[in-house]
Image (spheres, rainbow, N blue to C red):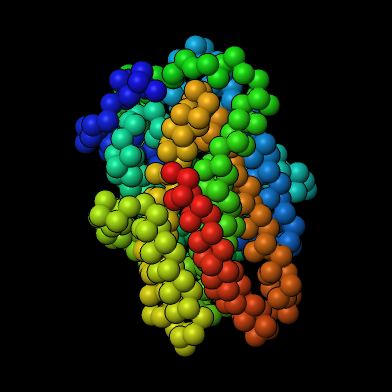
Amino acid sequence: MAQRMATSGAHPLPQTLRIGYSSGNMGKSLQWNTVELFYLYYLTDILGLPPALAGGLIFLTLVWDGLSDPLAGFLVDRYSHFFKSYRRILACSIPFCALAFSGIFALPVLFPTHTIAAVLVAGLLFRIGYTFIDIAHNSLLANLTSDGHERTVLSAYRFFFSSVGTLLLLWLAAPVLRQETTAEPFVMFSVMVGVAYLLVMYSCVAAIGRRGQLQVVSSRRSSMGASFLELLQNRYLMWLSLFVILVSLFVTIMPRFAVFYSKEYLGGAEQSTYLVAAYTLGQLLSLPCWLRTAKCFGKYHTVKLALIVFSGASLTLLFTPVSFVASTVAFFIAGFAFAGINVIIWSLLPDAIDINEQLFGRRHEAFTFGIIVPLMKICAGISAALVGAILALTGYQGLDSEWTALGIKEAMTFLPLFAVLLAMIPLTRMKLLH
């Protein structure tokens, strides 16, 4: 542990490094949020796949992602002498990930008679590339500094750039969503996103420089199974995992419904760009508030407050008369709250790695992120499948009655409220164990 402190230091990082490293989240946001916000819509309304089938295909690719992430994380830790640095992993993976991202839109068009197979193959290839990018970039959060407050600052910077990436994505997506009949505009859109992704991610790599060297630790002599069992004994990490599951499954479901909610209530799918923009602006404007709150009152009180604010957004959407203004306000409040939840989650993950090192003398940086991040992705896949199932049950693209709109509205409000109540339990346990 002493060596770790000497390596990273417990001092504020240079501002250029904070910005450069965190800008990687902008690139990742461009890809991740495209899939999160628009890919299900692309499969159902553009390619014509049934909602349940489309949600199921997305779920399968995320299960694949979840299975490959722990293996990739373990290999990075075990063969740190080969990989040398997270910077090298990023530099080698970026081009493949950019090309595979465009493929998830282009391959179904190139093979129209094998649409389902094309969607599945393209999704699997994209998830492989994204896995190595995500593990390397996320692990740097624990590698660059050992100071708890600095990790919270880095988490906030990361979230800021994620939000900027989302706003850029919405600007690119708005004209595409107005053309609802053909797939070609979506393919061109994916190419533009891919080019922007390349520019941003290589800027991040340049900013990291010679930092981010992989630590040669005793975990290299452990098997993957032994390392996994060790993480299971870290009770702090287990409670944090439960909290992550609840947030990833249900709290994030509101923006996933945005495009369908807009089509049913606000007169067109393109209106969803304004709702998601309000959600993202809420995130951006909230970051100074959550940083100040965390510094004054601690991480656990901050995230509890954020959960309470998010429940207020759900209640606003549920009980106020439906209008563009009311919906925009509800999404703004939800984004404001979710920023606090997300920043604290990413600040707590390195703490779990430190606790594991104190308990067992081994530091599993990439492997820990290789467990938690795919857990988020699998839950996101289940959430996407759940959205597809709810749409199918309410008769979307079939009945399209008032029950369709009512089902969408109730699902995107009651499910997050349910998760907020349950999430208080693991938070309390984590605070006692820290």
